Image (cartoon, rainbow, N blue to C red; front, side, top):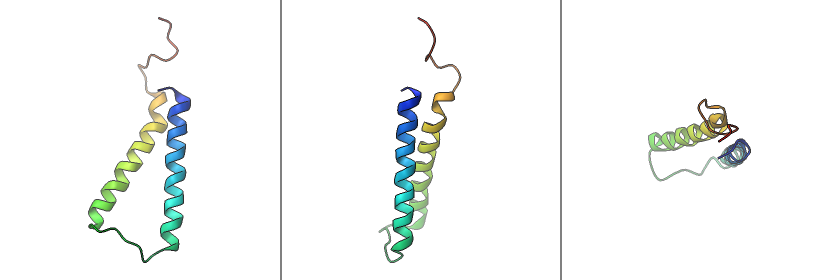
Length: 68
């Protein structure tokens, strides 16, 4: 996956998180059918994947840009 695709997916995920956050603030009566611990776990995984996609193109040892 190249830098542009990775950043595009991460940007989309970030925008989706912002839209969800705004929706959740305007609808406080909504809730999930499971405990808060599971909800926070899902949020943490989502955040970790988003951050990973943002920094993945900068990881050393990649083959992008190297001649074969």
